[in-house]
Image (cartoon, rainbow, N blue to C red; front, side, top):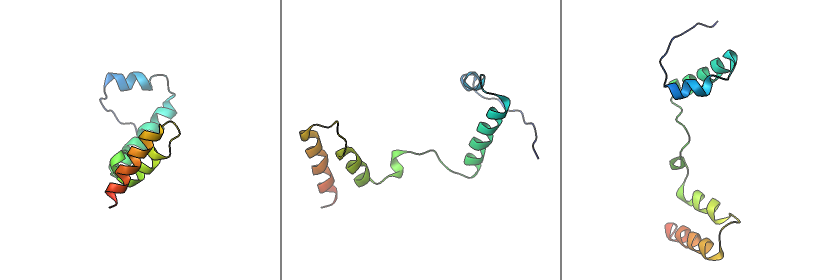
Length: 80
C-alpha cells in the first residue's frame, strides 16, 4: 500500500530529481527516508579504523616511495 505525502525540499534537490521518472523519485525518496528512520548514517571515513585507512593509502600505486614510507611510519607509530 502506498500514500502520497507532501514535503518541502531545497530547490537544488528538486532540480536534480526533475528528470527522473515518478517511480524512480518515489524509490529514491523511500530509500532515503527508510535509511534515515532506521538511523543508518551516511558512510564517513570515521567509520573505518585509522590503521585500515593507512594500509589502503600505503597500497596505492600512485604514491612515491617516500610517501609510502611516510605512511608506513605513521602506521608503525600507531601500533607501537
